[in-house]
Length: 435
Image (cartoon, rainbow, N blue to C red):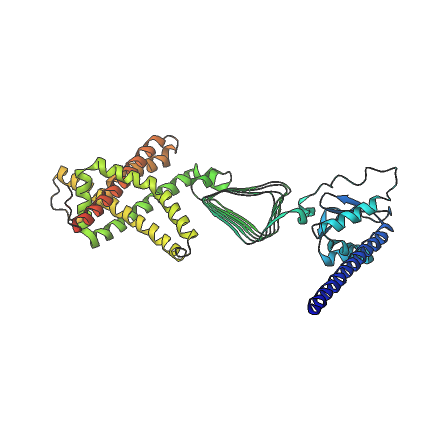
């Protein structure tokens, strides 16, 4: 019994000591707030803001309109300051201001309420004042939504609103970027457009490849700016290339480029015949026997190529195991280009065989047959480019369109025939007969 009473007595004493210590700490905290309030009131009017404290200097020559303490951060006239900048700007008052940042929301409300109790009756509306307008260089970073790390999107658009701060880089592939907030790293957009608003701040370089950079007046970009256009769109821009294209020199250059392209394709086709004549003959036979099916297969493969490629990149990017496999994507694209070239060579070989039979050239070899086929397919385009040198591009546009359609049909038919031959080979190896 005595032991129980002893234990209870000890517990009671401990509880009383804890209560006394809590009361002492609470009283000390209240004294600290009262002392802080009295010292602030000597030079400032203390105002309650929605999520912090506002201090308005009483001296008219202070050079400061308002000091705001929000969420542990200090800003002067709307410009966020670091601890060192606070001491350099406010001098002896810096310690008082920084003490406010250590108070919780309840203590800040008490400090504001205590300060507002003594505000003159002639200005009862002072506790809530309108916020100062902010510019991109004086944005209240303490109220912004910060997102750490890099922001990477593939096949999707990215929007950085005015109240957002991205701590890393922003990378967008096959999508557009709309930047109205702050990016502390680089902004890179590939195959898309970048819109940098008037309130945007980019602390590093901005690079746009295969798209357009739209930079609004007032946008701040601290690094270099590069906008690389890809494809026919670059010729539509004003300037030297656009003016040169419609001159005699430009048309001669276009003809030379076409001849060079045909020569390169011919050389590659001859190399393919040297190493794979059997496959070329199979593709030619398939294109001749079933041109509709082969053409439809080639066209469908072209339509599905980019969606399938994009989905593959996304699936590999989001999976940890698949990230190293992204290195194989360029090789996959190169393989598709090889299949396209092999298919086109097969169609050229078939066209050459038709001409040999038409004109009785029975003694021509495989190389001469492929060379004849390639030149026949590209004949209309070469004639159009040659006529453009004399008559102008506008007058030969219909002929150029016909040449483009002939070449496109040959590439599409060959692509589909190559795919069908490959599928047929797989099924035959699997023991399944294919008609």
